Length: 91
Image (cartoon, rainbow, N blue to C red; front, side):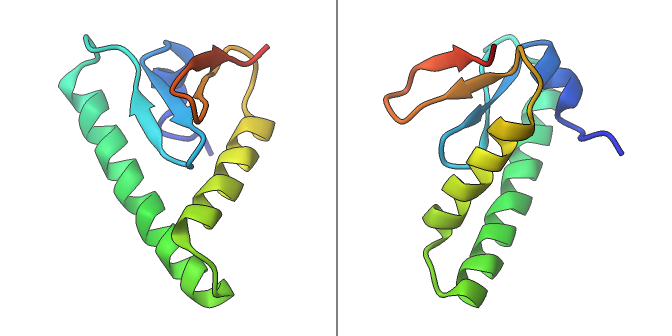
């Protein structure tokens, strides 16, 4: 099953952040892509909160672990924002 963010990521409109959330990279991204990112991030936040409570850790820790999984499974060409705020492309 395809991830709904695959096409916007491939187009470079959306990237992934070090904290496990997606972010619009291109200010010209269509409104539906921005809405999708907001929806996905709400779902992720809820998931991180649930898992954090279950594992007795912070949601931020869960997000960072999830971010690493996203990076590891992402194909080349996807964009990632590091903690310093720099966008880098996966090669």
